[in-house]
Amino acid sequence: MKRLFALLLFALALVPVATFAQDAPSAPAVANPQAGHEYSPLVEKTVNYKNWTLNDLKDNKPVDLRSLVQGKKLVMVVYFAPWCPNWRNEAPVAARLFEKYKDQGFAVIGVSEYGARDTVSTFFGPTGSPYAVVSESESRENRDKTPHFGYRQATGDTRKWGSPYNVFLDPSNC
Image 1 (cartoon, rainbow, N blue to C red):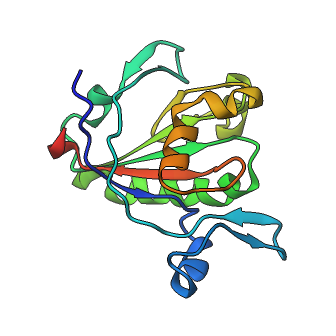
Image 2: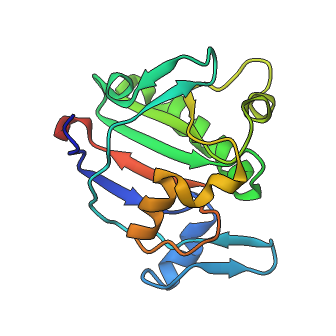
C-alpha cells in the first residue's frame, strides 16, 4: 500500500506543554519537576506515516487506518499508555476536541501502547471511548519495537516513553 500520509506531527501533551513550547520551541524534552511529568516541545514535522491494521479495543477485530480516516478532514492519532500520568491529563482534552469538532470532519484515533487491553478498557470505563481506540502493543518490553517509538525517534522526541504522542493526519493527502 501507499506509504504516503502527509501529516503535521505534534509530540506533546496538548494543554500542559503549551507553556513550555512557547518559551523554547526547539528545546529538547523538558522535565517539569513540580508535576513529575516529562514533556516534549511542540514541533511541526512532515513524515511518511505508514498505513496500519490494528485490533479495535471494542471487539478485538482488525481495523485499517484508511477506513478510519475515510471522509474525515483532519484526524488526530494519539499514541498513549493507559498508565501514563500525562495521558490522564490529555485524555479529557482529546475527548472534548472530538465531541466539539466531530460534526465538522475531525476524528480522534487512540493507539494504545504498553498496556494490556483490559487496562485500556478499564481506563475508558463501562461506556468506552467516544472515539476509535486500537492496540499497537500491550507490553512495556515492546517499547523499542513499535512504529510509535520509530516515529518519535525520527522526529527528535527523546522522552523515554513518549506518551501521549499526537500525529495530525490530513486524509486528503492519502
